[in-house]
Each structure stands twice: as structure tokens, then as C-alpha cells.
Image 1 (cartoon, protein in one colour):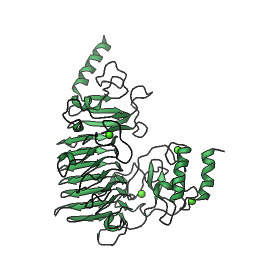
Image 2 (spheres, helix red, strand yellow):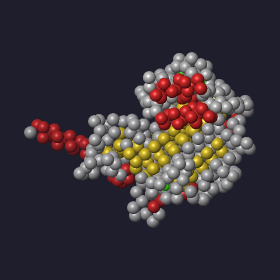
Image 3 (cartoon, helix red, strand yellow):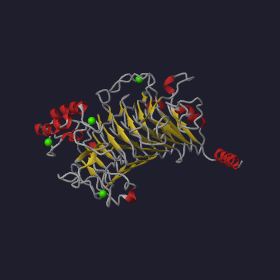
Image 4 (cartoon, helix red, strand yellow):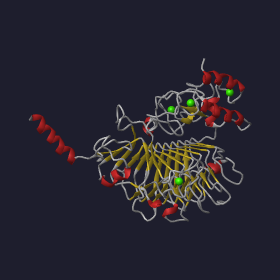
Length: 475
Ligand SMILES: [Ca+2]
Ligand SMILES: [Ca+2]
Ligand SMILES: [Ca+2]
Ligand SMILES: [Ca+2]
């Protein structure tokens, strides 16, 4: 009897408090009301349809596609953020020993705009893809999207209406937190991965890789385009994003980011291998009252016209407006940007458990230490970087903050030669070794090839192969 009373009281309390709504593509049911991992909704859209402010939506690994049912144009399908609702991906879900276990790498949760499931590498077969994978309109700061891969949005409208902006995420006067997300293979005319109109989103701990702006003559912001807003970019990695890949887009600007009017704040971000056909391979700023504030960041090997050169203006440039940059590493630094604590030295990227853009450190690697270590504007702890790392052995950033993107702690360990980070060296790694071996030249070794510099002498040659082969074949 006492047990019965306790249960019913608990039930009442639960009904009044916030709800936790589960989503799992593999939920076994038989009910699918979101109440547990195996009774989860199998579609994210169904959970968002019933979520109200204060609810949390938890999503298990797998792939989720916006539902086009009932729409005149299937490409208008999108996941719409709900004000005050947090949406978190990366859970193990139904059937796992611990369904609440969370690891955004191990349990990758993908929101994709590829309705027909027919995309090919290098942006092939996009004509069926949704315009925006995620849409956020007028949501406030308690709204959160955390721990997802967002891929294959295609906002291919003609400049400059809504369908041309933000293939991955489209924000209109919205202030959400978007964190621990990975944006890849999204494209648009402006803001391939994310477009912000007038809002103040906080975008942190995100990786933007291989997104592009290219759909019309005025392509801009391969990864992010922010217009008349107050966007904060904190601890994000921008790598391999492009604005205008071909001569069809001769005016394309902002390989990684375009900031038009408003204020944009960039802290502890790394921009590398981004490019724009016209100006600003890293960041392009425009608008008479535009303000860009950059601290503790790295701009290296971003390129723009006339000859795809990685000089200072290819890293970040203002057509109009004001750039303030301090404690940052900028390739080709001329002094024209003024500021305090800036350097223009090779950041010496190093491979590690979760990627290619850690920093070389003498504590791990007997070679030269990256000039970006301990070169930032304050302590790591005071700048929200104290629980992440730039070191391949995953020691937390201590004392003065290091410049650039910080990786999360994975606990995976790291072995030289494991280019695809499976935890072992196998044939797939050998294929990558071959590509890196032929890649060697006067320009040096690409950051992701450094995983094969087995002897640590800054090249990939036969000496490295002699050390790689036994790891591949075993003793
Ligand atoms: Ca497709
Ligand atoms: Ca430090
Ligand atoms: Ca491997
Ligand atoms: Ca070597």
C-alpha cells in the first residue's frame, strides 16, 4: 500500500515537471511515446511536435531525416527548434547495456538533409536534399542543440531569399546554443553550414568541415554567414570550407565565415585550409557598422585570390567595418591589424585521438613546441577551455590558455599510423600512407599526414615506412 502511494505521488510529480522525450531509430516498442529508450519515437520530428518549453529530447545514434509528408515541396522539410527545449544526440539507446551512455563519436547521431539517400562525395546528387536541415525562428537562449552531426543541407535558392541561406541550420532572430556539433557537406548560397539573421546564437565546441557556398554569383560564407546579428563562435574548428569553388563564383567571399553588419565574436577557434574565390579565405567582414572581435584563435593556410595565396588578407579581411584581433596566430601577419599578443608563426599542428589539429608540445613530442601553447589572453579555466585539450595525450589545457581549437577528452589513446582512428593500424591506413608518401614536397607535410611521420623528422619517407610496416603487419 505504501509502495502504491509513493508510486502515484511520484507519477504526479513527474507529470508536472519537465519531460524527457526519447528518440531512437532502433526502438523496439511496441509503444512509441518517447517515455523510454525502447518506447522511443523513431523520428526526431515526432518528438519535436510534442515537446514544450522545459522539455529535453534525447536522441540515440543513427540517422534522422526531416519528414516531408504533407508538404507541397518535400525540400521544405526541416527539423524546427522548439523554444526552451534542449535536444541532445549521441546516446547508446535501446538494446545497449547502458542505453544512457553518451559519446557523440561512438554513438554518432546524424541529422541529414539527403531525402533520397543518394548523395555522393563532393556534393553530388543534391537536387532532392532539403533546403535547411534545422530551422530556428525566434527561439531564446534556453534552446539547445547539442551533440549532432548535421549534414547534406542544400539551400540553393537565388540570392538572397530564405531558400538560399543556411543549408545545415537556418536561424532567424534566434538565440540558441548550438554545441558539440559537427557540420559537414552542407551547401548554400550564403552560410553553407549555418546562416544567422539578426539573432545572437552561441555556437561552441563545433567542427565545420567541408561545407561550401557556391550556388550563385554572390556565394558567401562557406561554413557560416551571420547578418545583422550578434553571433558568438567559441572553440570551433573550421577546416576545408570553401566559398565559390569554380570560376562560376568569381565574387565569392568568406571561405569559412562571412560577417555582415552586426557583431561577431570569435574565441579559441582554428581556421585552416578554407578558401574563397575572391576575398577572405578565413573570415570576410563587411558593413559600415560591422564589428568583428577575435581572441585566442589560429588562422593558418586559408587562401583566396588572386592566386590562392595564404597571406594575411586571405586569413581575415574587412571590406568595411572594424576588426579587433588579439592573442591570435595569423599567417602572414603584417602588423596592420594592430592588436596585442598576435603572432604569425607556423602553429605546428599535431595529430591526436580525435583529429589532426592538436598542437605540437614538447611534453609529448621531443620536437619544437607550437608557438600557440600558453600564448592566449588569460587562464584556460577562466576562458572555458580548462576541461579540453590541445595535447595529443589529452592532458587538460593548464595555466595560460593555448590559442586555437581545443579537442574534447576522448580517453581513446592514439597510435601513430592509425590515420582513420579505429584504434589499430590496418589496410585502410596503408592506403592513406601511400597518399601521404607521394604528397611530400617542398611545401611540407599536410597536417593529417603527420600521423605517418613515425620518426618525427617532418617528412614521410622510407624511414617512416620501415617503422609503419611492422605496426601494420604485427610482429
Ligand atoms: Ca540527395
Ligand atoms: Ca596552456
Ligand atoms: Ca586504423
Ligand atoms: Ca619522417
